[in-house]
Length: 202
Length: 201
Image (cartoon, rainbow over all chains, first blue to last red; front, side):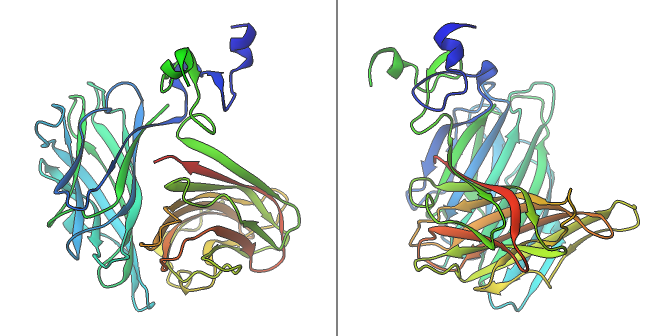
């Protein structure tokens, strides 16, 4: 590599030479903003072999129904069906706004053991007007046809009963088929606000 | 924008047009380096430009030993005193291999306007510091509370312990958050870098 191409490696603006192997940076693929009445939010494109890892960033997700749980599922057919077997672990910590209660624990009721239905991402959403919940979900190597597909999530939920719930969830989609779509929904009623952005990493 | 520059937007290799204000979805906004400061404030750059902000704290070194490292948030005035509720999860392992635990620490979570504890018991040995990250979501919202997620590590002094603190919170205000401030409970921040990034959403 020589001349202007070499000179432009590592520049942050203008005409630059991209790093080898597509970057090492985050690329925004798609943002879906809730229209206020979404039974589901689905990402049916952009999840492929372009990137090694993907990250969903959730900003101010608002639930229609108090005490609802944010769910997810994966698809290996581009979103025609969301029914991937998965095993997850789930734990959280909570703290009430008035300081009246605080604890941490593994939540057996929220994990999954090879279920093909939706699984819990974060629990216990409040539906107060100012209750927005945010966090992230990493999905690793979804296009692999050799390995199961691992994921890790952390979320902060402004909860029913004016609790802060600090959610931790991990697991794997137990398939060697490529995962090509992901879908999010509430355990009851709709997603009534917020946005979810999908990024490709590295 | 036209021609090959426009065509090359969003390409992932070769000669490409970088995204506005710096390549990739993350944009570096500012870096503040501590040098014997009682507080470090990031008083600009947190606004409605980005949906998600990341603050990295690199090798934050206190002047005093066994100090508590905190963050607080500015919500419309000059004071860093936004009301908040927080969690505090502690994972520890001693160098001597005689201590390990994993607990929720009700003594270090918080409600109210005081600082959010990011890391307890930071040592001031020459090789000691604390480092970590803070994700701050949609700080300019005037509708929702402001969620944030923190992940810090430190080497505690005497006995030396690897301390890992997972904490989170929300500023329980609908006013926009437009600044953050870091401090130790005693003494100064002798050194360390605080970098602010924005994530396009």
